[in-house]
Image (cartoon, rainbow, N blue to C red; front, side, top):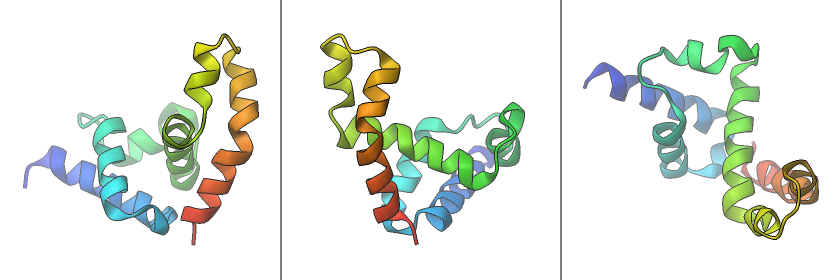
Length: 102
């Protein structure tokens, strides 16, 4: 297996540990979308953000949830400012994160 694949799988494994009910396929797909394969997972996760692995992963999933499971994009299309749209969908995002957590 090439190094890029190994790094992507490592990130997906970390995601699955943090949010096991999200499912392996969803974790792997998100890792493929978001992971910069030129950087080691630890750099990607902590990097300049100063985040823990879990915080980074939750932020990745929060963005995914916002776009796939809430009316966030519709709010943006209808002229809501980004921060207001995020506030409106925050309870839905938090609920889905709780569903996918341990």
